[in-house]
Amino acid sequence: MVEVTFTYDFRSDLNLEEYTKIARKATAMMLTAEGFIEFHANRNYLGSPHVRRTSVWKSLAHWASFAQQPEFQKLTAEFRQHVTHLDVQLWGPSPISPEPIKP
Image (cartoon, one colour):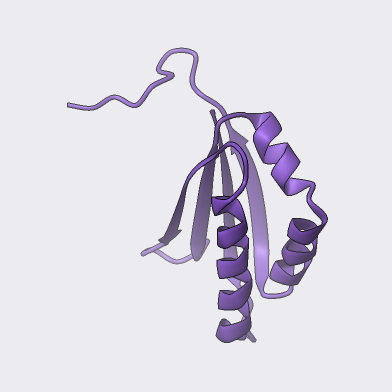
């Protein structure tokens, strides 16, 4: 399993309507992608970065296949026009605690 995390701030001239269309389209694409498990979007109560979007995939190969689709590449380019300080991280399971720990 792999988690792909995008963190970013909004540009000061953000067009919220355009950004929302792009974000929803990207999310809809993920829902039908092979190997997609789940998606989380969060806002930072303390400021920057403003947003964290995390998608969970069965494998790195599934994510890579999705990320290389021309339509997703186009959406990503459009998305970058609305954000700044974009950071993308790929996370795999810990060798010490590979599964979530629950009570």
